[in-house]
Amino acid sequence: MVSDTSVKADPSTSGFLTSFDRLIRPIEDVANLMAALAIFLLMVLGCSQIVLRTVFNSPIAGYIDLVELSMAGMAFLGAAYCQRLGSHIRMEILITYLKGRWIWVFEIIGTVLAMGIIGVLIWYGWDHFLRSFQLGDTTIDAEYPVWPSKLLVPIAFLLWFLRLGIQLLGSIRLFKNPELEPIGIASIQDAATTAKEEIQETFGETIDVVSSEVTSDPISDSIDKNGSSKDKGAAS
Image (cartoon, rainbow, N blue to C red; front, side, top):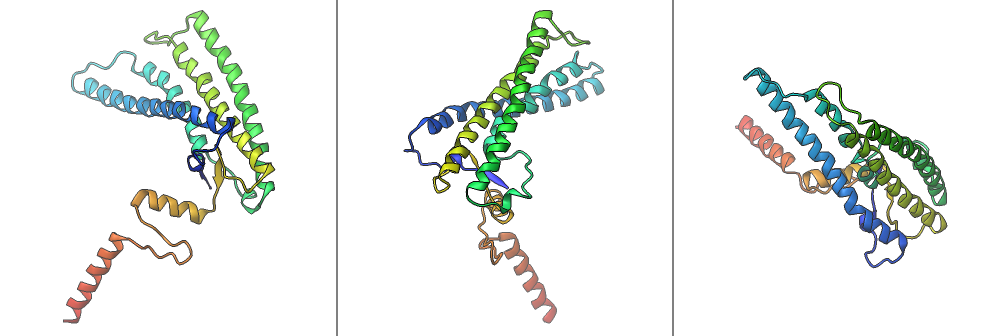
């Protein structure tokens, strides 16, 4: 499991890596917000389509085309944000057993491979956008222009590429000195620590990973109280 540690870096830390991380974080947040907004608007559009078609027999013109055009934004604009948080699916069967510099060796290799793949997607995504823009490509039904949707793909992947570049520099930095504080990377955590953080974030509770005793659990407290009251009633 991984989690975002760039927010935990010392704000006074100087250098290109910290400055670049601070610069790109707001852009990632805005892109992720745009993806979330696209999902919300698509939900509103779908509900409106059902009501207008069922009740008023007047469906929205080009509804299917609008859904297709929104897919690129929903799928790719939040990719860099998820990379920063370490939310992408990872295979950690081997890497969780590594320590010291070996962890960052594999992180560097994986990041370089990812940057190569994303770089290819940026190149061909930009070509597809240019071809669509020059030809005036439109959707089949309502003839909406396709190029704005295709433009989002290389933009989102470029943002993702920059985030991977930050993580590559951060991994190289920790490879040189594993004792340094992580900056701009997602740290590797075991399942117990990740579960503890998710419980804390979701329920506002603290849990002891070793003893598995919840220090504040109103649900369990209410169950215990109800159970003890029933036992007293049964005994009487």
